[in-house]
Amino acid sequence: MTSTTLTAPDLITAGKLEIKVTSIPRTRSMPKAAELGFGRIFTDHMFAMDYEEGRGWFDARIVPYGPIPMDPGASALHYGQAMFDGCKAFRARDGRILLFRNKRHAARMSEGAPRLGMTAPDAETIHAAMKALVDFERDWVPSEPGTSLYLRPTLIGTEGFLGVRAAKKYMFFVILSPVGAYYPDGMKPVKIWVEKDYIRAAKGGLGAVKAGANYAASLYAATAAQKRGYAQVLWLDALEHRYCEEVGVMNLFVQLKDEIVTAPLGGTILAGVTRDSVITLLRDWGYTVNERRYAFDEVVEARKNGTLGEVFGTGTAAVISPVGEFGFTEGSLKTSDGAIGPLAQRLYSTLTAIQYGEAPDVHGWTEEVTRVA
Ligand SMILES: *Cc1c(COP(=O)(O)O)cnc(C)c1O
Image 1 (cartoon, rainbow, N blue to C red):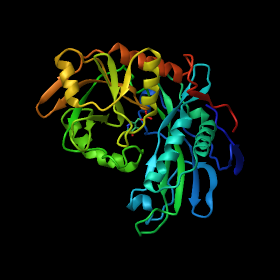
Image 2 (image 1 turned 135 degrees about the vertical axis):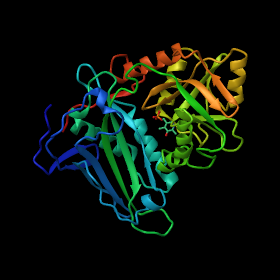
Image 3 (image 1 turned 180 degrees about the vertical axis):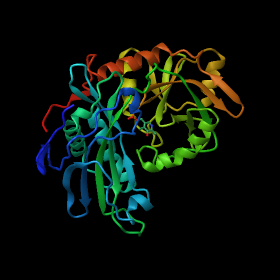
Image 4 (image 1 turned 90 degrees about the horizontal axis):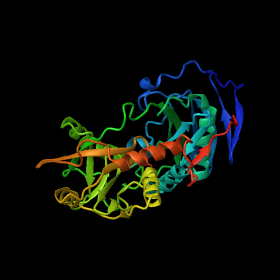
């Protein structure tokens, strides 16, 4: 494995960005796919950039990965001004590096920030920063089947000030983590706990934003569900605890009689990029997909009268995660006989084939990272 050596500091131009580079020689080699796991190993460098009110964004830089100096009064630490996104870069068999719908992730982040009172770089800048860093760290994109490079753009309030108001200083950074195959032994259905006591997001709240706070709100219930033997929780609506919203940190799809349903984007749902891709593919294939409210009772009813089809979650990490069973205080409901449904299988194969450049990309979802750095 070769390392990119540059005489530091150097400059990279990426769109509107002039990125100052301080690099270190690479000393670690890529772990084997089986040892990668998720989000445990980080690449040698990170991207960072700062913002101050009146000055705008400045000091775009690629620097060695490491701790960031932080004012103990920073708003991210006290008032939760913190958000992120997550997307991936894939190594095609011919060596090319492909980003998957990266611009959409950048736009979601940029558009979500104001809900937290935060100032984010514009979508083009976020996209350019991610792409430049992936290019710079291209040797860190793993090539074994099912592996990828996970991108984590993050935005935090950095102003040291304890008054409760939106911060006037922010930091945007991107870190990268080579990740292993989500399903090293093939897709497995998961057991999901139907959560009736705790909620993830209420109407008018932060549910549509990838805010760190949403994750903090979810961890207690998720841990309790795991103790009961469930992989994740099914989040119901905050008001009546009846309507299905999301499953863990994934969007949920349920195949009913002659339609496939998923919760509508009404402010409590995260607008998953995988959700959008799945809706697009299903409609391409002639399925009726309805973004509508549906009660968990409807799922139970469909199971009773034999009209329940497949149930699966969607998200960047797993792509498709089939749900095999729902558990709740009164009992449980098996959605299938434990086999992976043909629809989940087809969606998974199709999406991953597009991501690795092995299937035609008719929707223009992938973007090659050509070598600049
Ligand atoms: C990130 C996330 C998703 C999935 O979004 P993708 O863009 O498909 O990765 C779904 N729900 C929640 C709550 C999330 O945070």
